[in-house]
Amino acid sequence: MSRKRKRRPRTPAAKKSPASGTAREAASQPQPAPTQRRRRADERPPAPWGNAPLAELVILGGIVSLAYGIIGGHETAIGLGVALAGLGGMEVAIREHFAGYRSHTTLLAGAVFVFTVGGLYYFAGQVLAVCLPIGAAASAVAFFLARRAFQRASGGLSYRIGGMRG
Image 1: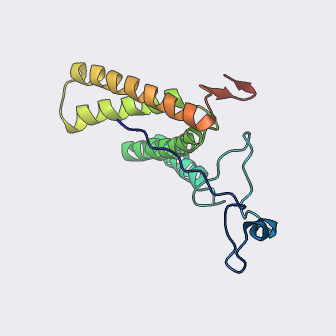
Image 2 (image 1 turned 120 degrees about the horizontal axis):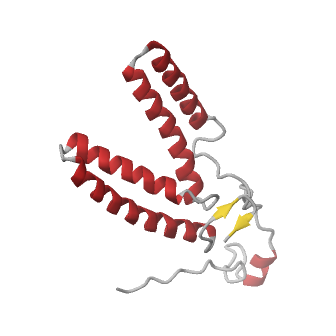
């Protein structure tokens, strides 16, 4: 397996100005200011859709549906509420984990376990004694991969909790 080399960005001194032919004049010209500010390490990663509180609204909808289902005795509303609240929470956890902000390795591996066991049990019709070991194996693989992804995103840290880093 061959490893690809990263290309280095060209320095301003190496570029030639189209108007003048010298690199020195091109380096003396002011560079445009970057339009995005850099995110500090203790800031949450921004949502891809901007400042709209979409994940929070999905969680709120899940809580409302869950309360409606519990009070009214509707099993479908309870399931919908749990699914919506879980979806909103998982979105935030995935975004924070892969941006290197907080490690959610165990949560992501647990979600893989639940989805694997549920899929095998309900959709493939397997018995629970077969589903559980397969789900545990899938969860262990997901734990390892999620941990490695967080280490790459956070600059080598294996966890980041509040002020603690390790």
